Structures are given as C-alpha cells and as structure tokens.
Image 1 (cartoon, rainbow, N blue to C red):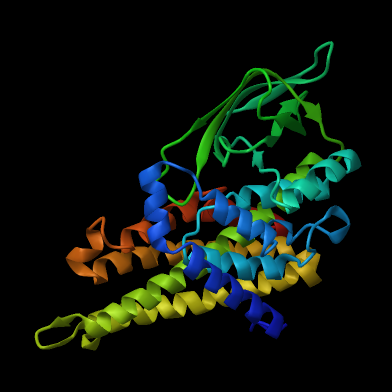
Image 2 (image 1 turned 120 degrees about the vertical axis):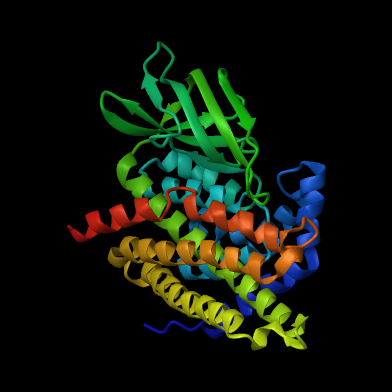
Length: 362
C-alpha cells in the first residue's frame, strides 16, 4: 500500500494549508484566547461550506462529500499544523456514530445538517475518571442522569449523542442542548485550541438511538485515534520545521547552534520519530478506506506512535529555542500545550495499547 499522497490528496493538502495560512494563522488563535471565544465562526463556516470538511466521511446520500478517512486525515494534518480551533472533531465523531447505528430517522435528520455546517453535534462518553450517566424510563420516554467530562465542544453543540448505562448495558441517546436538566460548563483547558465542557444531566429527556451502541462507540474511538494522530503529525512537523530553522539562525560561540551534536541529534531523533509515525498514519488512513478490518488496530498504532512522539517533540521544541521558547510571545508554548492535550484526549497511548492488545487477542 503506497504511503505517499496521491495527486488529489496533495492538492487537498495544499488547499487546506493555504486556507490556514490566509484565514487562520497562529495570530488568530491568540486573538481567540484573548476574546474567550472557542473558535472563529467565520473560519468554521468556510471550512464547512468552501472546503466541505465536516462532510468528508458522510456519504453523498446524506449531503456529505464521501471523501473518506484518508482525505479527512490529510485535511486534519494541515489543520493540526496550524492549531486551528474548530468543532470539526466533535462533529466527525458524532457523524461516525450515526452512520454506525441503525437509526435512519436520526441519520436523515442530522447528517445533512452536520455536513453543511448548520449543526454542531458532539459525542459525550463518560470515562472511568470522567463521571457516569445512567438512563431510566419515564411516562414520556427515557431520561438521563449523570456527568460527562470532558466533552469536545460540549458548550457549543446543539445536539449531543450521550452514552448511558441501563440494566448493565450501554445505549446511545440523542439529547437536545436546550433540554431540561442539561447544564454545559466550559472547562479551562490546557490546550487553547480545544473547547472542552462538563455536561451535567438531571433527569434530562432523551431519545434512545437504534442500533449497536458498543460497536458504534468502538468505531468512533478508531476515528478519534486517526484524527488525533493526524493533527499530531501536522503539529509535530510544524515544530520540527520551526526548531530546525531556529537552529540555523541562532548563533552561540560563533556558530549556529545546529552545528552542535547535542542539537543535531535531538532534531534527528524528532525527524526519525515523525517519519515512523507518519508512515503508520498513512497506513491507517488507507486501511480505513480499503481494509476496514485493519482500521482499528492500525489507527491505534498510529495514535500511540504519534501521540508519544509529539509529546516528546514539544519538549525539545521549547528547550531548543532556549529562553524565548518559554515566553508567552513565542508559538512554541502553544504547541507544547497542544501536545500534552493530544496525548491524553479521548484515551491516551496506554488505553490504545490495551485496545490493540484486545483486537490482536493478546
């Protein structure tokens, strides 16, 4: 399986890269931080209407582009390189769950709106450390009670797909953001390019979605692994390029610091780790489109390699920039925080190694 980009993928990468440079440079992220807004609404509108990114994994029959996992990975790599803040990941996970379930009414209603950027949806799944949600019956239908944290763009979403337990089984429920008993509290995140929230539910009315919730959630985790690996690959490449360029112009003891072995070796290690992780990422993306049976394990491998490598690379990026790398004015610290977040968000390397072992029967 070829690991290099096709001509179409290369054109897509260049288009998204140009969009990021023109419409969402890192200065825009700093403006968002100052404003307190979770993302730029105009940028999100253009990502969905002009580039169609929210519909990449949604079939054309539901108003999407139907471009597949590989195309989404290419786009997310470029967005990750620019630390673009958007609700794309939450929407992609919600769409993936809807596509994996058997609820045709929910698909027909929600997927075209997600693909067109008219509706922000997200997935709310409680982890062992992030709360618990239970479902119970009522005369007018199911209600949910519990807490989920963190939830991607939980404070901005119009609808949430909430995983809840009932009689020892897991179900997926559709909840309107304005439903009674639902409170969304935006969290203070380490990574300024993410909007995270705590969702509290108190006898909140919901609709049970038809289908195998466990299988749908597993598919969403596979997509999350691919997406976060893609963003990490782009951001890590940006760190490597930024640090290599700095090593060429920063002079110490009469020569560029890149001439010193201590610097060269760390940059070489970063390059080696990126190449290995990126190869695994391309393999996983192609598997998603062509070999679905391999997609889960391949996505776990890519996530483990790139999440770990990126988290190490951001430390080197800050340190090799010296004193300036620690300042608020330099971009290195933005990648540092993003690298820490990407490593643990939606299940870190340890969780993915466990999933990989289970899939291999180890």
